[in-house]
Length: 409
Image 1 (cartoon, rainbow, N blue to C red):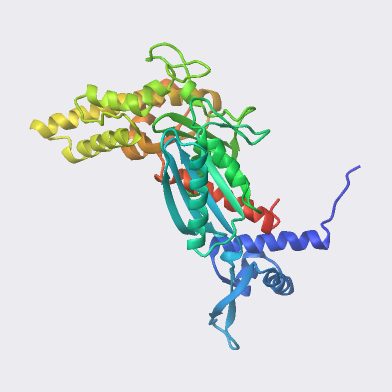
Image 2 (cartoon, rainbow, N blue to C red):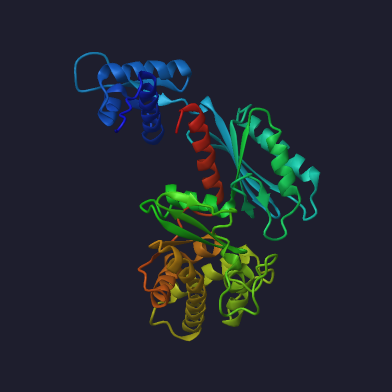
C-alpha cells in the first residue's frame, strides 16, 4: 500500500519562501507581479510570503516601477544582501588570499597575507586579525560563514585536513583560529574541489552536470563532478591525480610523495623544464607563475606568427608549437586515465597552466585524447579565472548561509 504525504501549510510556506528568495538572489529586484509570473503562485500567496520575508529582514522594498496600467506604481522587492556576511580563503604554502562578501556573493573587500616558510602560530593569528580588520573596514562586524580552500585531503567523516605532502603547520593552526570566531561556521574544502565548483556554477562547465576539472599548476589535481554532485571519495582523495603512475617519469610515486607520478609530467617544474628543452625562456624557480608565463608566451608567439612566418619569428613559432604539442601529449596521458574510468564527456583545464594555455592548449589536448581513448571527450579551457578557488569558496559559503537563512534542504 502506498502512503501519500501531503505538504503541511508550514512546509508549503517554507518551500514558497525558498523559491522566492532564490529568484530574488538570481534575478535581482522583482515586483510582486513578476514573482507571480515566475513562481506560478497566486496573488494572495505572493503577498503573504513577501510580507513574511520582510518581517524576517530578508526582503525589503527598494523602489517602485511603473507598469502599463492605471493605478499606483508597483513596489520592487529585493533580497537584503547585508542580512548576513561571509568570507572565503584561498590558502597556499606562502600565504593566503581572502575576500569578504555579502549574502548575494558580492565582494565587499579583499586582502592578501604573505607567510614565511617557517610561520608558526603567530601566522595564524596575523591572518585572523587581517580577516577581522578587512571585514570591519567593509562595515561587517560578524561573519556568518567562512569557507577555506586548502591543499590536501579533507576527510569527509571528520572535516579535518590531512596532508598528502608537506603542508605548513600554520594551515591547521589557521583553521583552529577561525573556528574560535564566535557564531561563525567554518567550512574546509580541498582547493581544487572549490575551483571545480566555480567552473560548474559560473565557469566553463555551466552547461554540464558531469565533467572533470584538471588543475594544472605547481602540482596537479582534479575535481570530479558527476550528475551535478562533487565526489570526494571514501577518504576525500578523489582527484589526487598527482600520484597517478604514468609512463615518461623516472620511478613511481610513493604514499608520501607524488614524485614519479603525473605531477612529474605536468607540474610547474616539469613544464618549465620542457619549455627550456624547446629553447623557450622559463623562470629558473619553476613555480606556477613561471610555468604560466612560459605557456602564455608560447601560445601568443604561435598565434602572432601565423602559418607563413619565416626567419626568427617562424622559428620561435615552430618551437612554441612543438612545446605546446608535447605538453598537450603529457596532459592527455593523465586525462585519458581519468576518462576511461569515469567517462565524464568533458574535461576542463584549469590552474595557472590551463588558464595560460586557453583554447589553443585545450584543442591540442582534445585531439591527443581522442587517440588515447575510445570515449568521446570534449576538452575546454577553464573560464573561472585565477580566482577560481576563491570564487568556489564564496559559492560554498553562500550555499551554507542560504541553507541556514532560507531553510534550504
